[in-house]
Image (cartoon, rainbow, N blue to C red; front, side, top):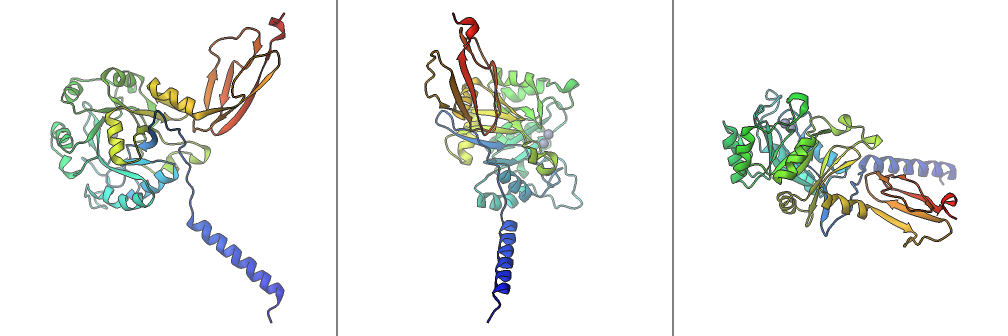
Length: 345
Ligand SMILES: [Zn+2]
Ligand SMILES: [Zn+2]
């Protein structure tokens, strides 16, 4: 007959063993929480990443796991066509990054977009071509042939980091860009690359009706380049799509339904940013604010990834309330609206 004490000991050991095994098999995901707006699904996307197939330092499957853990819905692999840092160690086949990443991405319900970065010195600089069917064919002697070949494949083309290697990192719109734009070979533009924001480029995007894009342009592992454990995140593009699918993302990009998420900021057109804000917050109390002579406690929940800073737009005579408020991400706050005795007779 077994000693009851040793039975308990073995049971405890078994539980510990099971717990350790389960923990080693699981990983967590930070959901990129943004509300759906205007009848569209809000998708968190990164359209600019590199692997060891150009000058990145990670294998394509690592990009999949990172994207999943960071709450992305879609990402594009956009290795440079023209240069590779590891050609002595990696057999360069430009179709391979997407082929390698796709099965893992499908297992995790992530959309993995086949792309490439057409890379020339400025002007015209670098362009990402997304939704390619044959990356190898886009590797051409002239950038014009490369862009045209990408267009023939139905690509969505983005001018990347327009301020790169320009005085004070300010974008300059050269004659080459006018030609590319007039040919219809430029659809989007990186208003933010990594964490660099180009305000002049945002103005071009609005004036020339280009889609606003924010790309991480990540080369190393995201866990090393960003302090993810402190809430830091890569720059992403929010896409307002009809559904979560590659074709819906493509349709939304051509229709310019995007915003950029960089640090604790959203950059984009008012028509999208306003509903994101109003769909992020919920005033849980009171349902209707009726001012009377007594104090009122207001409770607001912020369900989004963004901490909103609110500034009072005006004054309500006879009432006291905070003129500035922070609505922290994923938190609920309360504040009091009360009669201002000084101004009440
Ligand atoms: Zn580049
Ligand atoms: Zn790049």
